[in-house]
Image: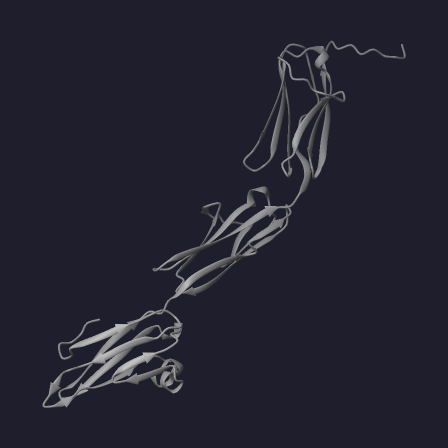
Length: 298
């Protein structure tokens, strides 16, 4: 605030919402024993924000040139003008008032469980002002919107055709020049029975080379894949290795690698994905030339 040398001081005391604010326009300038007269006004189009309205409703009063406003409101943002007048003329000072209220944020629902393929909504409820920016994060990284993840408004995101990649922690960040707050919510996946998304095919080959059989499965919780040959569990030996790992999206991939295949390695191979939500299996034949099968009818 710039103060003219015609006036000795101007004092401003401002506090947060629901407390009182004091604006003093005081002068000790005396010219020929004529004291100054101070008045307050605003320049706002809305009559309900005028000094006269504040005085009429009892939310403000003027005492000895001091404007006292109680229960500060967001509508009180802006300039208040103090005009001091004496026989030598008048001068006006403006006081810029910024009303703030602490920011709070909450995402509803805080935890939700959604089945694959369904839709989820996350709504960030915000109070306080000013709120200058609202942003969304997923697992601490900026949320990537697209065809499935849409911002219906700054406070509302909708995720359609839920996939495994959508599960995790979502954060709503709210900032202004004074502070920043965040809210967090978790999106969980409902139980889904295992589904085989990749299956090995029937093969016919000569003895000697290596062969790899692969199955991949999805589901929630992440399933485990077990292997059988002609109905019996596959053994682990120096020629037959079973490997299994889980991708970052929760799918499981399993391989059976057989080196230097022999005729006795032929047969019906089964991969079975199992979890508490169910199971799924696939069977295909590996044919190795030279394997003899006894026919009980001969």
